[in-house]
Structures are given as C-alpha cells and as structure tokens.
Amino acid sequence: MCSGRVDLEFIFRSFAKGQDGVFIGGCKLDECNYTTHGNYDALANTYIAKRLLKHIGINPKRLRTEFMSGADGHLLAEYTDNFSGEIRELGPLGTSEGLSRGELKIKLESARKLIPYLRLVERERLRVPEKTKKAYTSFFESYETKNLFDKIVSDKLAISQILLLLKDKALSTSDIAQNLDLNPSDVSKHMNTSSRQGLIKYDTNSNCYALA
Image 1: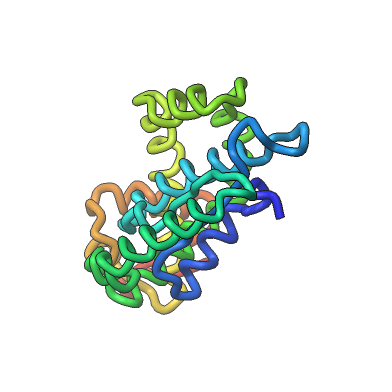
Image 2 (image 1 turned 30 degrees about the vertical axis):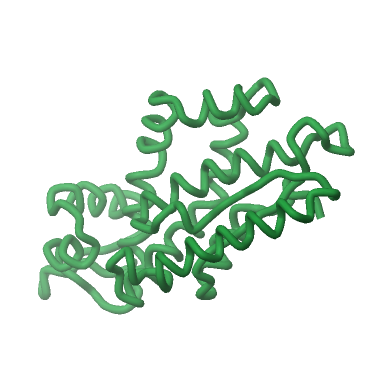
C-alpha cells in the first residue's frame, strides 16, 4: 500500500487503540512509481500529525516516517530497531506525558474529530505547490505555517474536548477549565461560541453547562 494512503485517521486510531508508537515506511521521495508521488502526502500528513500530537500534549516522537527503497532492508531494520528503542525509553503512551487514561482518551478522541476538517484545511491552506523535500521542510517548519496551524486548530480542538467532557455530565466553567487545564476566560469564550451554535445549553439551577 502506498504510504500516501496512510490517512491521519489511521495514525490517531492506532494511538487511540493503545499503541505507544506509530512507524510509517514509504518509498524514497522522488522515486515513486506513480505520477501522484503519494509519499509526499505521507510527509505532509506526518508534519500535520506531529503538530496535532504536540497540541494535545503527546510527544511527537511517538510518530516517525522514513523513506527507503525495496532494496533497503537493512535500513528498515535499523530504523525500526532505533524507533522501538526510543519508544521503550518514552514508556507507555500517556505516562511520560503525565496524562491519566481519561485525559488521554479525551485528547485523542477530540483530535480524531478534527481530522475531516484538517483534510479540508490541508487542501486549501497547507498544500505545498512543489513536491520536493526542501519545499516541504521549508513550508511545514516555517514560523508562518506553525502559527497558521495553531490559529486553525487551537479553538476547534478546545471546543471538541469540552463537548466530549460534557458527554458524561454537566460542568461549570471552572470545572471544565480544571479538567482540561485551560484558562477560565478561554473556556467562557468557547462556551459562548458553542452556545450560539446550539451545541450546549446553560442550566441556571446548577450553574453548569450541558450538551444541548
């Protein structure tokens, strides 16, 4: 299967199912057998996934993508051995990040819910016009792209986490802020936005928010 077919959903589903690390192996860049050069899509997805992992508090080193030819069996062994050792040093998913099982579940689920939106963003605003490693590295590691991604993702990710948290029970603004380690003023902003969209409702008796 082409590495370009490894969707963001596959990566985050693996983490959600308890995998401590995800390794993706693809053909060498500029040596694709197809005109689409899908391995560049894999490279873009890796940059996006690592950025999203960082946003939800998971070490981006838990994801690695390497490119090699079919004759590079020795490289595959070297890469996977090295990656396995690095994951062992990091420990179980969530442990080194200081996340409880419940926190980890909410963060991963909220990230997965953003994936359809990120696919659209990637097509419209995160698409690199030139398929070269230098162009992709320059684009995705630039301050402008990182800043753009932060602006695009931060609010939507926070709202997604809040909605998942409210599935269990109604909570106050301070409860939500404490559970998700967010600034109470930011939580209030997100609650106002979600309320206008009809996603949540406010219970004046309990002074708590609940799903609409």
